[in-house]
Image (cartoon, rainbow, N blue to C red):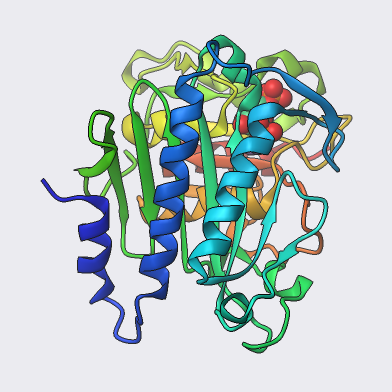
Length: 333
Ligand code: AHG
Ligand code: MN
Ligand code: MN
C-alpha cells in the first residue's frame, strides 16, 4: 500500500534538479482536495448546494461550491508557499501571491476548482482540474500574465481529482499517468492505478448531442459514423455523456473512447477553457497514450492569448480522435 505522498517523494528522484517544491505543491493540492471532498459529501445535508446568484467573468452562474472549492485550493496553495500565483475559472484575473515565500517561488497553478458543478445538486460526479507551470518572469518579482499564457507543452505537471463513487486523484509529471484512490475512513490516497494507459480505440463517444444541429459538418459525420452498424468494427458505439469533463474523460481513459466538445454555430471556440480544462486533460491524455486536438491542431501547441480562452476539444483514444480529425478535414465548410 503506497500513499500518494510516498509515491510523489519516490518519483522526485526522477528529476535530478528537483528540490522538493513540486512535491510540496502537490501536497497542497492533495490537502485541498480532501477538504473539498468532505464538503461535497455533505451536499444535500448542509446549505452548500445551489447557485450564489453571481455570474463569473464568462457569464456562467457560480455555484456555492464553485466558490468554496476556489477558496480552499487558493488558500492551500498560498499557505504552502511554493506558488507565486494562480489563475482560476472563478477569478476574473490571475492572483499574485506576493508574500516573501510566494514571490520567491517558481510555480504557477491554473485550475478549474470545481468541474461539472451543476451536477452536484443531482449527486453526479464532479472534479477539480489543475495545471502547473514554471514561471517565465524573474523569481522575486510579482507574477505577470505571461507566466500563465504558456502553451500546454510547457506544463510541468497536471491532474484532476474526481469526486465520484470513490474519490481519486490522477496526475502526471510527464512520466506516465498515475491514479490514487482515497480511503474515506483514513482520508489517505493510496496508489491504485499505476501507469494508466488509454486503449488505442474504444466503443464509446461522449458529446452533447443536444447541440447536434449546431455542430460543424465533420462532427455530424463522425457522430453518424459512430452510429453506423459495422459489427467487426464494434459499431454502433455507445453514447455516454455525463456533462462533467473530468468524469467523461476518466471513463474514456479507463475504457477507451472519445470526448468531443466542438465549436457550435453560436460558440465558434466551443465551451471548454484552454488553460485550465483542455491543456491539463490533453497532457494526461497524451501521457496515457491518447490524443488531444482542436479537430485540426494539437491542443498543447496552441499559444494562448487570453486567460479564459475557449477551444474546441477532441480527446481520447488515438485511433478514434484521428478518425474524427479526418472527417473534420474532409468536411470543411
Ligand atoms: P464547469 O462546471 O467547470 O463550468 O465545466 C462544465 C463543463 C464540462 O465539465 C463539461 O464537459 C461541459 O461543461 C458540459 O457542457 P454542456 O452542458 O454544454 O454539455
Ligand atoms: Mn469545467
Ligand atoms: Mn468549474
